[in-house]
Image (cartoon, rainbow, N blue to C red):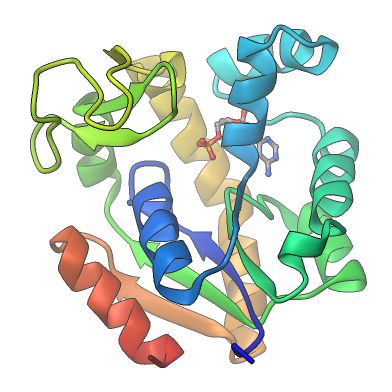
Length: 213
Ligand code: AMP
């Protein structure tokens, strides 16, 4: 039996959460739940939720907690999450943390440390596949062919919320709200802090070292 591993990744936007989540998912055979991805899919499919979320997301604001909490709790009830999971982008504030901890709980909170300046630089060079959501970076993780996804051949784009005004807003929200969550897991002794500024592989190895092989 694989050991139960309920993880959430924290760090400002562009700290590499999505990339590390994918790598950890493969290594530990766990599903990833990315709330950002859930919302982007809803937007693409032009659902009611998508229409409501798109305006907020493009301005770098959070989707209301009642909606986000409902989606996450509903999703985590599915059988595939019963041996553990990797959360990317949730919980994002104390209300979300409260709901998560009352209903399910986490084993580890992994924090990727990176400065605001590095965030600004990284997000400006981040590209996502408009078709399958794969993440690239034109500086340190480029696609083989410019603007084309290696996996599905889709067009690579800059997300609207990776544009400078939205980045500034998102960093402000991150510092105001997410850091309280970090304090919570630090007090519980459940935090793993890793320097997120290194190479992708190095960051990954450091996380695995602390989680156990
Ligand atoms: P991300 O890809 O995690 O940066 O998420 C993109 C956007 O989706 C965020 O800027 C928020 O507008 C929204 N979002 C993602 N996760 C959450 C969450 N846990 N609570 C509220 N809004 C969220």
